[in-house]
Image (cartoon, rainbow, N blue to C red):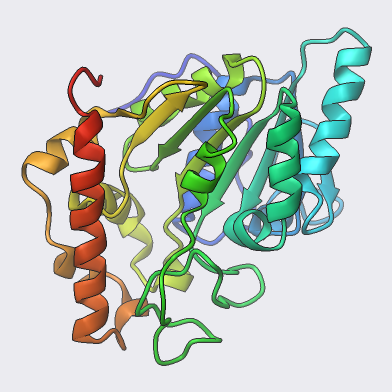
Length: 295
C-alpha cells in the first residue's frame, strides 16, 4: 500500500546508511510529520554518520552534532534559544539506545525533569551498532555482539518505563512495521507541550544479521510476539495499548520464529529463548490491564 504523506521527503537519497536500516525508515516518516522548520540534535551514533559525510548531508533540516552523552542537554539549550526568540521551530533529538539508555541516561533524565519542549526519538537497534555492534543495556538475552560472542546474559534495561517514571508530556513506543501508528504518534509528540519521547524499534540488518528486505517483517513480528508492545501515554494518564498490540495479545506470534529470523541469536540457548518467551508473556499480562477502552 502506498502511503500518501502529502509532503516531500526530508531524508535525501544516497545517504550512507546500511541497506534496510530501520532507523532511516522510521526517522524519514517522523521528519515528514515535523516538516522543514525543525532542528535536529544528533549525538554520536549511526545517525550522526548517516546524516552527512562532509561536505554532504542527508537531512534537509539544520543538524547539530554533539557528544555521545550530550544530546538531551544540547537540545535543551537549543529549545531555550528558540523560545527566547519567540519562534515555533521543532527541536528534536535523534539518538541511539547506547546514547540514551546507557551513556546519555543522566542527561536524558535531566531533560525530562526540566520538561523542555523537545521531541526525543530513541531509535533502538539494541546494540552499539555504529562502533561495531557491541552490547548495550538494550541488547536482548542470547544475542551475539562483538562483546558477547556467546550471547548476551541478563535482562534488557527497560528504558521506556524509566522515561515513564518522569511523567513526560507524551511518550510512545513505535515500530517501522506499523507506519500509520508511527506517524500518528510523531504528530502527537510534536504537538505536546513539554518533553515528549518516542521509543522506536529499529531493526539493524548487519547487527541483527537479517536480510535487508526483512526489516519491516521483523519489526512487525516483534510486535506480534508481544516482545515489543505498542503503547502511548500522556502526562498523568494510564498507558493506552494500540491496535496492533491488542490484536497480538489475542493471538501472539511465535517468539521462536522471531528469534529464528535473526542470525544474532545463533548462539542463543534454550534458556535464552525461554527467557524471551517469558518476557513476551509478562508484557502481554501486564499491558492487557490497559486494553479496555484503548484505541
